[in-house]
Image (cartoon, rainbow, N blue to C red):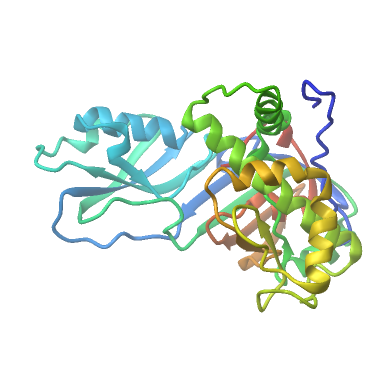
Length: 330
């Protein structure tokens, strides 16, 4: 999509494992995308209630709001480890801070979309990214293409795929990137429009993710994305999550990153003024327990990923996914 300046957002990042040799239908049914959190909050006495919920066709924010209303608390008194997509069957944990309020009948939350699996007391609010990861069971339907070539790619997946931020981070048709450009254009014109916190957060996350993907894409094109280069600040290949402070990379690594991000200098300047500090992110995403199985014209995949990573980063190495453009994984 083009923004108001006419910029086109190319979200088709280079693949690293030989290219997608097959095509398949993605999330035809919610049961085609099953996600289970790898987490179990510690039980005990406390003012928080932990609830494990399975949802189908409902997003995390909706369930959190329903829990807040049922308990008679503020929305920010409800915690969770991460957002889970609406177009899926997902199991995740929520926390509700009751303080001295009486505990409601949690079964009232149940519906055709929401099932309460268990609940118990605990001492602290659940916060994003504090779980150990997510386990996925994915079914790609109506596979077309070269299965032998796909098998060659599938054999390499367990050793690692590019750790891209998924397209969903950038919004529908790159809408969050359009937002970044609008913010910068308004600032350049001397306008200081105050954005809702959620919008600014989306823009910041999209900008950092875009810069990281630029660096990772350049490393893939150079064929060295799995190598530790001279000047690498970590023991494994990594890229920058931009913010305030000096880039930890030096020498060859620093030069490559600077070149990849050169067209986005104003984005970097803006991020430095948003209060974020420099961080690093692994370039390689290694799934745990990766397995696959052909089932007629379908391909079934199972694997686990750490928090903050994207199943689509793995899937795009294997297949071109129909419905990806209009369905969002969170």
